[in-house]
Image (cartoon, rainbow, N blue to C red; front, side):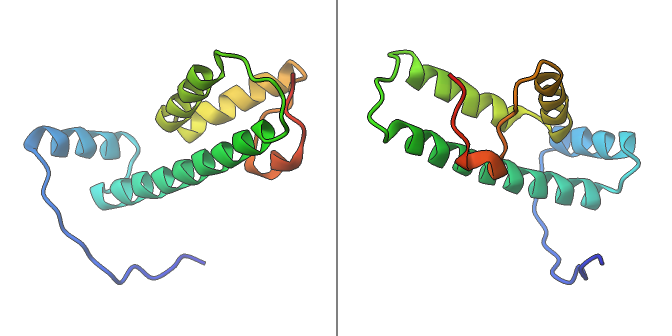
Length: 116
């Protein structure tokens, strides 16, 4: 059941940003409001996944294992790339990992051992 949308907000955008978002919404067959609402919700989901990734990585590092000197930059790259990836991109990557027999990381798999 879809929740009732009862709290309107308004904010200003530059003309270029407005046109870019409006075009993206039209390409998806959505209203500008629905498109921006979806973008905000996806951003919230991505932020939650990043927080869960951080916790998983911190838990994995707490075991006293000797971490590679490259680990901090690899983690930064991972977090940045996940932040910029669309849900469709993430699904495609997960499907490719599964095709190769590698279990993809998901928040639900947080308790599993990390590959390595």
